[in-house]
Image 1 (tube, helix red, strand yellow):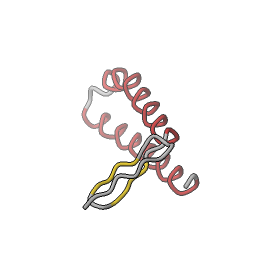
Image 2: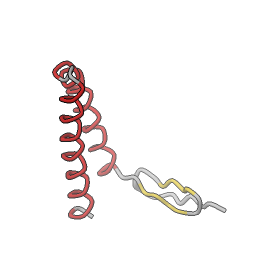
Image 3: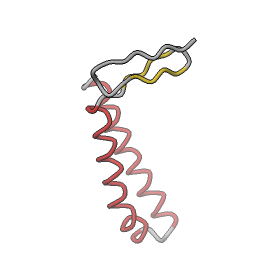
Length: 77
């Protein structure tokens, strides 16, 4: 049986007896990253019409994003 516990923070979501907390400190950066993605995606696609160049640039962006996520996960935890 899943239990949902209320708190002063944004709230808790219970998934298969595991409680996951989402605070504003975690949600706001997600909105910023989505906003940056929306702003940069049209010019990114426009400049990468060649498939090889597109996949090269996409891999660079994935490395950058994964690095930022790992740094924030390990150092801000």
